[in-house]
Image (cartoon, rainbow, N blue to C red; front, side):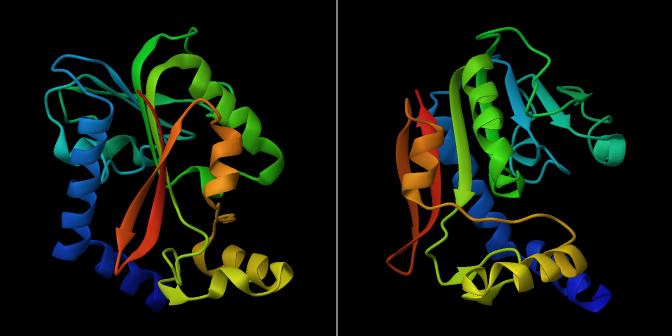
Length: 201
């Protein structure tokens, strides 16, 4: 399993992956009309590969559930690292001009997703929530075809032991139900919808 995780990390650092993330970041800037100086909340920032890597000017609040990724952010002058829970965000209503959330909601257990989504909607004036499309043939966490469709019990076993995270991908309808005030936008590869983005402008 350590060989698998190492290979997965290696792939994530390949130029084509970084180019894809940069293109998604640029789309976020366009769709949310991000202005210079506007504060951005990154819910589930991780190591900052989707937002912080490409933005060194806007004030960014990088929120994570623990201090695990603090060191990846503390040297950047425009980033404030905060430990918090996406299901109970420590911010007032509409406090954040923009909220960014990339490939996080599929890791939130099904019975907690509505609360997670409602918190983003509560604190954000505008938001951009991206998630992989369930119907894209390559599952992006495993980078294998159709593994999202194997029996749930076996998938949970693999998730726990290989990815070490809960995963349940969403489709367009599921994302729209969580973010009914958003427009659902598609990111396409090879003529197929690879990812979905809920955008409230």
